[in-house]
Amino acid sequence: MGLTPNNDGQLIRLAVPELTEERRREMVKVVHGIAEEGRVAIRNIRRDVMHDLRELKSEGEVGSDDEHRAEGELQKLTDQKVSELEALMHNKEAEILEV
Image 1: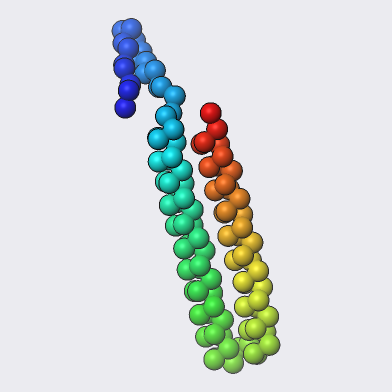
Image 2: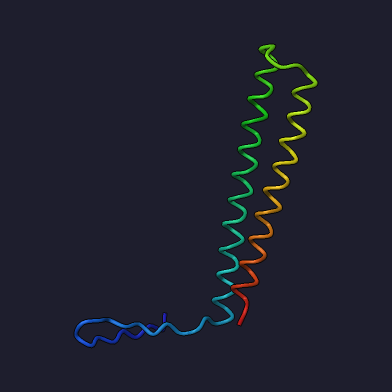
């Protein structure tokens, strides 16, 4: 890792070298993986809510129009959260690649 510890009797100091381009690229891949996990989690939540909506409709608690309207709102919210996640990912990528 390129770390050399220095001990002065009370403190241990580590001089952390700057990131290499290769290490930065690896970190960007990790960020992309975490973002993909986030997108999957958002889609799973959407799937669960859609299932709950269909159950409510089949039980007669909500009508077809209400179900359709709720599905549309859910899709808008899902798209919004995925967009926010993408923006955060791109900002973090730019931050990591910044020299």
